[in-house]
Image (spheres, rainbow, N blue to C red):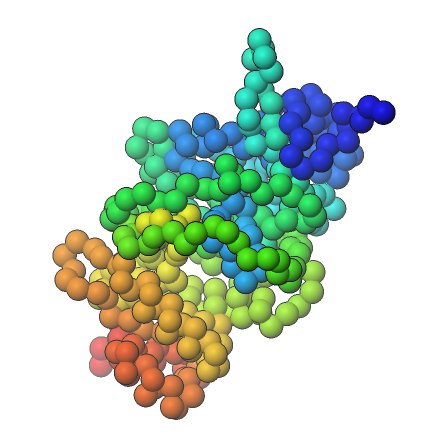
Length: 373
């Protein structure tokens, strides 16, 4: 019995014409929504991506919810956007759950013999990560120009093909590039109107047998100074959870404190960190370039969040280096209220300060800029 070409399973290789017959979408472009097939087809071309300063693929490092597939949005030159015609494909990805569509990912593998017709391998169905659906990232295109791209964080919805050839290449060398204040790249959670749709909550990770992948070396890193995008004050998801509320509170707190620093003329930003041997990109919450202070923000002042922030700020601060500043930055945890009293003793042991929001809406802390008398 012959299997219909319209039945496409993860791992199958098809032409775009065959994919369109099964899942709809346009005959060209990287992001192809289909209303009648309830699908948004995402095409990844490794060669094109590398030329334009990015890689799509699986992160080798899984988090507590499992694997993440990174897919870079539409726009080959200049800053990517969610606005207007240029941002229509990116909006389609962000609103796929609201519009009752699934994300289907394909990667180019070659061409039909004796033809210029491209072939694509089907990886499976995905959805956006409900906690962090996308991040802004600073990259360099093939001409060396800096630009901001949208990197969507995808979680598998059903059966998918995970192949080593689809893993993002690990960082090979140490680079340290300072990006001026005009640069914009940071984790974004939602903003109106581009991201007004509902996002699914991340599914609980199903633990399987241990991986055979060896741990990658991570002795060297690169750090890029970047500037935080405006954080949103709303996070729409299918169901409320303490985790999503904390994410929203953290974003609001970071934006408010950034505005406070800016009001005193401070240059503020963040650090985008690539660790040698790893595939994921780290991003700090906030960096005050004027006073050489690194902040790690949390949405609550609980003991658990303070301990997590402590570990993160100690980790990230090793890589924060900027011209004209000697040594590691001052490390500070940014909280919505004062932490439990005994946590000050723990933070003092590691020379980590605290800044928090006062009852009047201002901020309290030894490094917090204050107006003169």
